[in-house]
Each structure stands twice: as structure tokens, then as C-alpha cells.
Image 1 (cartoon, rainbow, N blue to C red):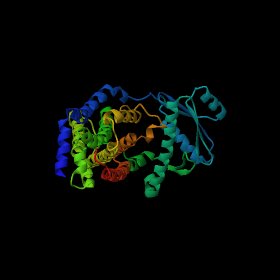
Image 2 (tube, one colour):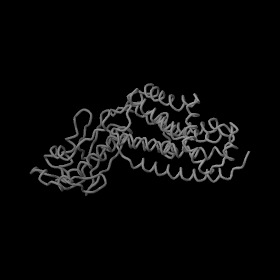
Image 3 (cartoon, rainbow, N blue to C red):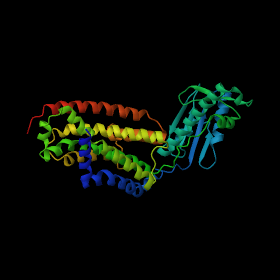
Image 4 (cartoon, rainbow, N blue to C red):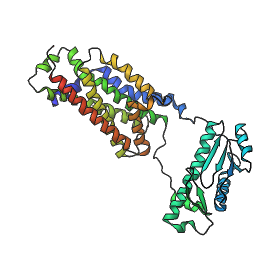
Length: 386
């Protein structure tokens, strides 16, 4: 096995085109795309002034008082203005005329109903405010259950959640509850568009490994050495597996080079911890190994030049999968593309330290590797001399 691995590594290093496209080109793209498209790192739209009128259907005095306190708390007089109305019909007409952003109705016995205007950004902002109101109430309820003393002796009022459930109480000392029970979590780095392309280019070279796998046997056929493999005295299944595993140095080198160059030369960021980065490396390694195994299986049948045949398919998938730009997202297509799924799993690891999607990607890669390796061995064992 060491001889075959060494042979595959030498062939990879000998081909200057391979070295450029698999080692240098992805790193260059991280720098070029990350800087040229840095303007995409700006906000999509300005929120502007938000004018909300609210109508209280709830009859409970404590609930009504809590809603009024909430409205006063978030109204700053400039950006957000939340006023109470007694004429719901007039407020709804104002929304239709685009005079105000939205009308919020606090229902009896509990619930929130939002009448939205034509400003989509304003609508999302109002929905976020109402969700924050409901979630804050839930946080206060949790605080009261864990430490009732934290509510002090201020008058508390019952809150209303957006899902229609009564969710707790808001005290006059809510700010102390916020300090004691709500904490912020720093992601550890200031993320930029460079970080996006550090992940997307890692995805790109991983999926291009499919083409590398096809060359494991198409190169033998082009070099007229396929018969030597078929007639060799060793077990064919062992020979086939060695050819697949011979690409491991290539996978490791291209992944490490891209990650190190992106971090130390271009100052991009991957995961915030060593554990996260090792897991990220392992996930992409498993995906690449599975794709190489799939490529080798395809290479047993492919009669045309692999790059010319497979590269257009890969580039189309990567374009619509958001690898080259995050602005492309077709909801009927994009979420189901393999490169998009792998890329999302990588972002889940690097941004939030969540490994669930990554573990699913590794599991699917393992199944794909086992299936294509088994199928490839069976086909190669039956292959006749050419």
C-alpha cells in the first residue's frame, strides 16, 4: 500500500495544473472574492422609523398595564414609536394608507395579532419586536420559577405570548432580572465576507475531488497501464482500495494549505476553537474521501475526459448552491444541493459551534463511501483485459 500511495502522491505533485487548481487557485479566490465582493458585507436595507399603533383587547388590568409599560419602554421617540389606539378600524386604515408601519392587537384572553403594511423591512422589524416581547415574558417566567425573590416586591403583571399562551410576569424591576438571567454570547471573532469565502472555497475544492477520483482509473487507461492492474497477481479488491486511499495525501494537503493560507495570510476565520477546526477538517476530509470513491467508480465507465465532462456539472451546482456568491438562492433548488448542505453544516460549526449538521454530513459521507467502494470493487473484479 505505501508504494501505491507514494505513486499517487508523486503523480499529483508532478502535474503542475493540478497543483495550481487544487492548492493555489482556491486560496487566491478567497482573497480576490473576499475583497472584491466586500461591499456585500453591508446591510441589505435601512430599517428607518417604525411607527406602531396597538390595541388592547385584553380586559385584565394587570395584562393591560404590562402591555402599556412595554410600549413605553421600547418607544424612543425617534426610531421606534408605539402608541395606543382606541379606534382599531382607523388604525387599520392608516396601515393601508402606509401612514404607519403596523397595528398590533393584543387579544383576549392572550395572543398577538399583527396587521402589516407595505414596508417588508418594517414588517420583519415589528415581528421581531413582538417575538422579543413574548420571549422576554418567557424569560421572566423562568426567572420567577427559579428565583421568585428576584422579582422583588414591585408590582408584576401577566405577559402575553405571540402563540396565545400566558407566559409569565413582568416586574417593575425587570432590568435587574435582565442582568441576572440574560447573558450575551460572543462568537469570538468579527466575521467578514472573507470568512464566507474561506468556507465556500473549501467546499469547492472538496467537491472537485470528485474529478480527482475519476482520474484514479481513467489515467491508467490513458497511459495504457490498465491491463497491468487487471493482470497483476495481487487481489483486485485490495488494489482498488489502495488506489482510493492513495488520494489521502492529496485531500489532506489541499485542505490544510487552504485553511492555513486563509487564516495566516488573509486573516480569515474558521471555528473559534481548536476542537471546532479539527471537526471542520474531519468533516471535509470525510466528504472528499466519499466523493473520490464515487469518482473512482464513475471512472471505471467514463470514456471521455473527466474534467470536461464533470466540471460543468459541478460549477452549475456550486453556482446555484451559493459557493461563489451568497446572493444566489433559489428556494426550490438551492437547499437540496449537496454543496449547499455541506456549506451550511460548516457555517453551523464555525459560527455557532453546533455539530449536529456536521455529524449528519459525516454519516452520509460514510454511507456513500462504503456503497461506492463496494460497488467499485465488484465492477473492477469483473473487468476484463482491454
